[in-house]
Image (cartoon, rainbow, N blue to C red):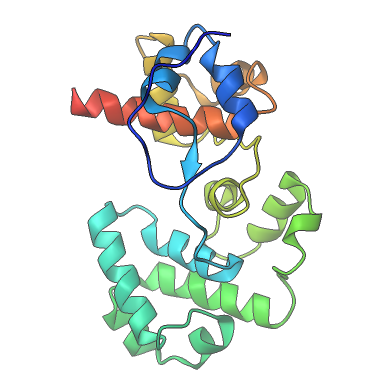
Length: 215
């Protein structure tokens, strides 16, 4: 196996060590892996519900703006993000935090369905990826991408492949030296070769894109 050059330390705990070893030897991803180092995630500070609320809040927003709105939302809920507090909160207070109407509807629908047991979140570990995605997308405003981000970042599932994510597509195109980013259908075919570590592959695609923006 090719030895990795020492990479700048990133915060968090190393996850998917097998993916690091697999991708380190990959002709396309090896340089990225050597530069970035193993996949690391910070300690998980969210339960499934609060993570989903955060994900909805961050949809289609730049990081700083999304973080500001999310911080205001948490404050409006008294510091605790759970279904009961969301359903008890006044709509005008949640809107004042900066939530769009569509995001408010989504978060309320999520809270209602979780509270009623229509979308239970306490047995998520027992479900396979597709079954969990099918459950989550029954909530208004939660699509496949948000469900996949939950699988990848909240649950740390190792083989999530978000073919619709523009950052992953653009990063993969850069790693493979393509003139254009691959289509979702092309992503599906390319991803076959990176099973069962496609979550880490996606993570390195994001890191490759970050590096290209910094150049």
